[in-house]
Image (cartoon, rainbow, N blue to C red; front, side):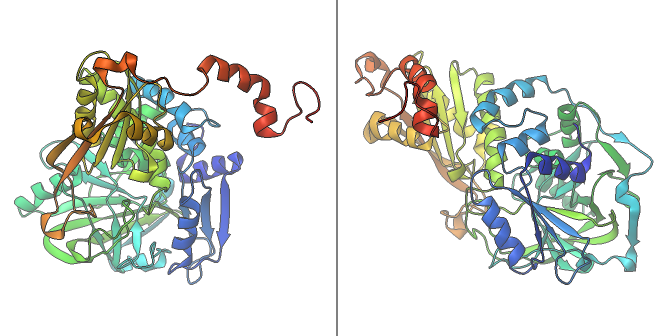
Length: 484
């Protein structure tokens, strides 16, 4: 990577021309609303909030860090200036080349410029936004990396599990059922032991991407991130927990979550676009130490109604993962996969195949719905022919409308893996949902007789675009003289 830590990333974003600086926004309403303004458009800008009223003017909040193709590419070490459709095959190839590199322990780092322990801990000094108007509290951890050790092995899990500010030295940590961090926490609680936790609140967005990705259990996200950047992530041994913490982090909290210690958490606006779960008692972490840089910057990534930052970078990552898992499951001739922004990259999956045998489309649809990258809180899988652009939702819905017949083209999977954030499931039945598999391919047995699509051939359109595209679409001079 050509940059180091969050500050280096911000400098690169400014060079790309995609940075906006907002001064004087308050934490109660304006930071959250401006963030929504930036996120709630495809390829919106990154925003750095400075001079937040009521806080040290040097303390900042940075949002929408990987909310565009170029910024996601920057974090992943891919070429900038491309679109999502162009990045998917590049990232799929890059995924195959990643070889995990463990983190490297170093003696010191910028995160240790300021240290507070015990009674000196004061989380209220950091500008912590109320991200959504009706949230139940202020969330200091949304672009967070929560660092948790597995008690049964040397596995260190990094997860993006939301963190709500309780008071000057306590935070709530919410983890959805089935997530790696939840499984680890249950192990500690079953033994009636406190769970050590470190929380990084500002860091290289690559670490944030790693912590929110479906990295296989047993592999540390540190190792994965090291493999992507081609060099080990520099870490320090946390003085309180012994956990590896990013040496170039902006802010790190250390402490323990003890069984039985809880506080009210939520509600919180989620990636589905709803307040899908209300206030509940959640485990509390007492913060024993805080480390931070001079003029620290919180990395914020609040979920919201799609499109958002989350649906931007995760559409690329999850689409590539599902494509890879379909191929590893033995599904041949998968042409493309896309998880559209409208479904939060989970609730809707589109798969394009070149049909080879009867049942091929159903096979692809069922595996996409239930493979690891597609299984959690999914809803609809649409399988289309290779002539349909899965990144164009209009094209996908056109195929559904013209190539599927409800009586013959639909399968339903019952009692699939859902979670508390599923808005359509009644509160008393959270945990399960159903999946709709739509075969929107030409019927295999008479596909050769299916009506021809009424559009120019790809070859003709390419010639036309090369000759007339700049003039018709971009206002360039006519290729055959002045337009009449």
